Length: 246
Image (cartoon, rainbow, N blue to C red; front, side, top):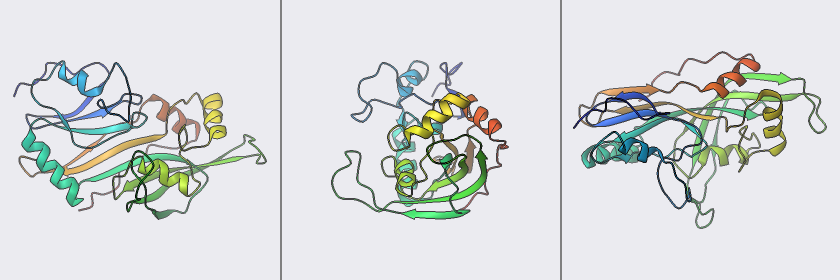
């Protein structure tokens, strides 16, 4: 398989070989056409196909509004092996999220979720978090003179539709910038005072075994400008990734 001379604009490569591509998906870009996305003129897979020949298979999903690590297989064989790892739950995904309030230092949400139509039978869904930092800012909203926010490391143990966003809505620690499952008043606050117009959810690391060599891999996606702006405004340093867990 040929290697591209350069990646398309807006796509930062993290790892590239003849079997897989790992890159940073920017916020606001859909991965591929689907009934969930609707009509659009720009898709990540289409950008890649302009510079990379052969099949391209997105191994997992990231919402249009979520940024971070995305894994692409370059053959049906690689896609099948990575899919097997996904089904066996040996692939570990960690996210960073900024949420309303101060949840416990660590915890889990075990709450079944329906599929993408938000109808039908709910299936088991589990999300775990670790609190990394907190802040209280002197901005009045509603009956509260200050607002509390937290930076979380989030690990979804299952892969339901918008699982992380819906789970934190369920426990009333809504993710900032979430226009579907969040709080509009807090979203407006971070837009007006901090210039942040995005969902504060970022797929930070991905641990998996290389589909050809079996080598254990960890890939980390850096934060974008809006993330760094809010981190600086809240006085938070970029946290070190947690340890790899088999």
